Length: 397
Image 1 (cartoon, rainbow, N blue to C red):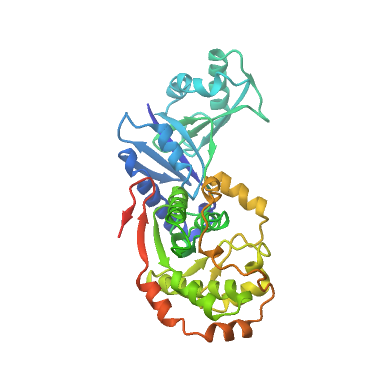
Image 2 (cartoon, rainbow, N blue to C red):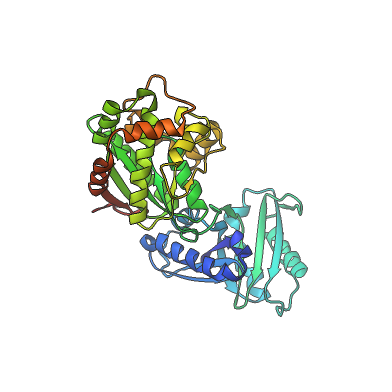
């Protein structure tokens, strides 16, 4: 007997001839996430990943909690591996299932025989194990429609596995199967959620942040770094680029119409982010914009912003209400950090009456009235870099 963890795949199973590639990336991601918990053996079969600890001292609760954050896994559970015989199936799991069943009122047993040569049929396995459990836990009753606990028996090629209490995984696709993207990470609620949502679809994230000292404080930068660290719990290792933006913002204030400050600022941010994105071989930019939430996120403003960028800009929050974004932020653990009262550069020199329906020709004319190119090149050159490793020490480069 040995306790292991079973991880069930989701839509990976629908990837046809590419299924093996997606599974290989997921296995690689799991190995990376578990490196600080010890040594493990992993193997996969029939849309399931089997995680075997090589040490009896492994804290399986910690491992299970870590795997809950790995995209590509839809269900996971602790399971008992037993000898593939009816004798073992009816004997070995009884004590193991105590934690799951002692406080329950109803239960059900289901069996799946991947090995069709196993002599006992599924109904026989369910009936006999169910009888043994009723003997051990006489307070239980059987409920085949809505049980408190579902006990599963899986008959595989070499072993049988018994488990209960499946928990939800993160779902989505394995990180790295959908390319690389650059997240514009501010100190707000929306951009960490946008990063999480794109990572869930398999995008490997890097992050870029713009700071404007002395108008923004060191605490504001540390807040954003903490957000990067927090989303790395789901998104894996994140390369973090911090761009000095003060000179550019002062130049915008001194040389551009006030009502266009924010639009021009965002266009220049996009230009800088695009250059760093191309340098890092990322394929897209990602922002936390939500349609109509603020003046810079109206349809007209987004059109003007996108015109400054040659590569795709993904906005996964675009159709969400603020309350929906807040719920996701709470769920992934970034909300409390996002609401800390440290302003970022997006609030510097905010116009009193920003244009909500800017015309692209007017914006381009205002922006090109001043030569920002030397400042853009300098900002890219002086960008600072950190690597946030999931669950490990940050690397400064």
